[in-house]
Length: 223
Image (cartoon, rainbow, N blue to C red; front, side, top):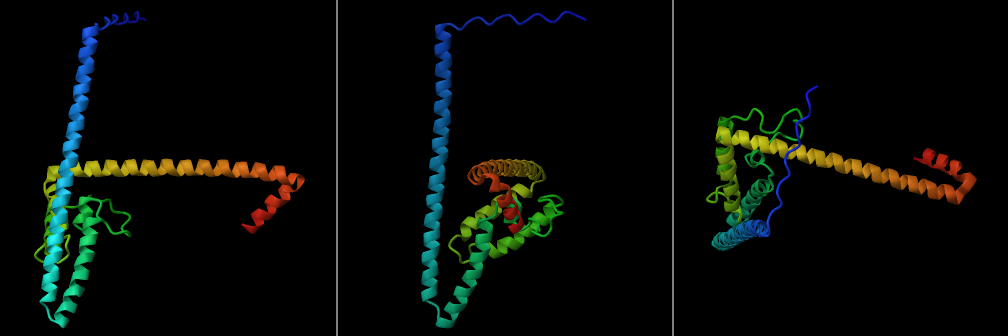
């Protein structure tokens, strides 16, 4: 057999200046990451403040509209707003772009995989249908603009074929990681339950002595 390759030459030790420069570089990168995270946090806070102000204005406008209505009109408006709220709740609680557009398979369609077979034409049709229901001019819920923003974002992702492919890959990876986490948690729970039952068995056997087998048999019959 051919002789093994020679080991790589040892790296010369860094000088004190090189070490100091490396520490300075790492510290600079850490400061940049921290500044970027802080900027993102402030941007999120500003957006949330704007959304909250927008919701308050819509709520105030709704109260004014309600006061100007007659009693029977007011009752009908309140009923319609309850239905509007249900639609908005569904959108805001959605966990994927498909669910936002009401394109997620139903709970009983276990054979379907989310996103598979959904065409751009179906996405556009679903967007139009949902937009009619949650557009701020149609929907009186104070959070309608927030839900409509989510709808537009979902549409932008899924209406472009390349963007949809990338999103599907990301979604499948997230679901795979979730399944692995659930499996790991289930295994941990099973191990903990086994250890506790073994400890309990040992304690009962110590306390009851020769009567322990009869006690366990009785427990098995009861269960």
